[in-house]
Amino acid sequence: MRVPFHIVQARREKLAALIDRHRYLPISELCRALGVSEATARRDLAALVGMNKVKRTHGGAVAEFNERFLSFKERQTASAGSKAALAHCALRFFRPGGVYFLDSGTTIFALAEAFYANPIAPVTIVTSNIPVGELLSAVPDVSVFQLAGQILNRQSVLLGEVACRSLEFWKFDIAFLSAQAADSSGIWNTQEIIVKQQLAAIERSARVVYCVDRAKIGSRASFLLRGWDAVDCLLTDAPPKLLDKLQIPRARTIGVQTDSLPPENLQAVAGFPVHFL
Image: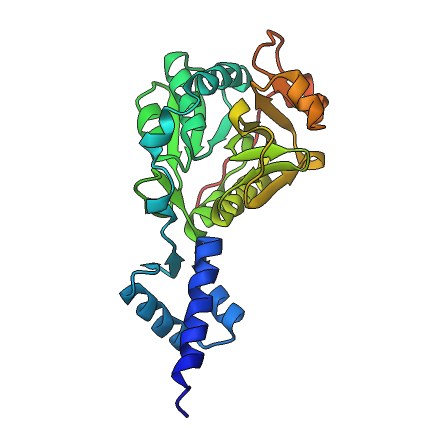
């Protein structure tokens, strides 16, 4: 029986809204959310692509955030001094023989630049950040591995279910993660797909260092990544008074102005195995 056009149109509008909110959804999740077959979901996606409302990807759909969100290069100049200060401090966490995950974003690229200038070797670096992989692959005695996944060219990152699955073959001493915001509730990011990938990296890491510059402290984004009770370490250049005002626990925070080394329980943990296919 033919479905009335107004019902089809309403379903497609709901589909477009779902993709716009979640940024990425695989076909299986679209089917569950809409209560339709895979064939119907694919027809609806094709119609939305024809109207330039979504972009098709292998196994799902990505909204226009790759175009609408500021590109990697455009974001590099924002808070450049803060990012450089965070990067210099983050170098203290590296130990020879360690295995480290470097997240997407320009703050983590600043960390890679600092590492390039003052390398700690030998180490293994795994990253979803395409410029980070390109930069650090030139450092002697540093083994660099890039995640699998869909390339978002403007964001210079690899994302998606394949990227999350490729994390399953690693165990990290420390994951260095970026974020879009932090407030009294915890640490936030703008895209669900990014949060999903970060959570996959967290599961594979002995310790996690969240690198968040002062411009992002005191705000929140669309998706909560971690509440403070689950945060190992916030690395920030935000002033202590602001952290206290926002009730961000100082015991979990390292300021970039301090000359002290990270607490003993945040030191890199050596000896974690690396698993390959």
